[in-house]
Length: 133
Image (cartoon, rainbow, N blue to C red; front, side, top):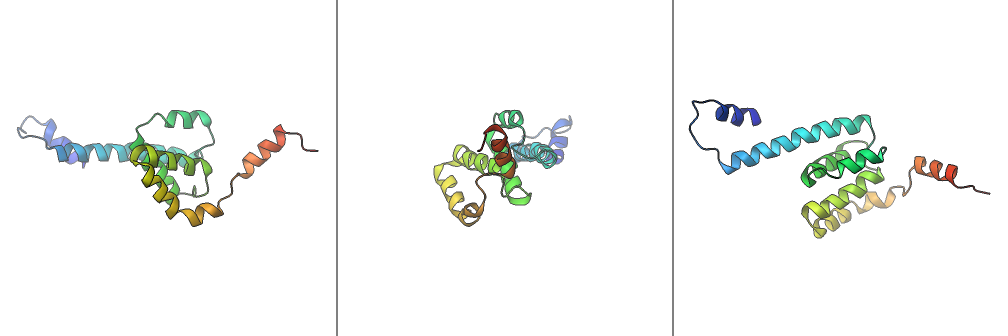
């Protein structure tokens, strides 16, 4: 998509106008391209495993975060990843609205009720940091 429109517009023979729809399509394609880069990164490094990365991820455009988080939740092994679920719900609120987030939560209710509240990693870290008699 980007190549088709971009190639036409970068050659001096093209004297036409670029429509708003073309610009919108290019923007969507670019967001998807950036999203793939983050998805590939989070395949190697589990989402939520590095708080610095999550903090930096949070400053990205909301739509980009939505695309990445939605993909991780739907298609990767992150359906039980509390960090993905938490950030996805937040971005649904920010990028769309509260009703969309509540609708998503309701759609996912059965799965979310079965998700563990704590990961084994967080339980182990808690045991290390707190002395249990």
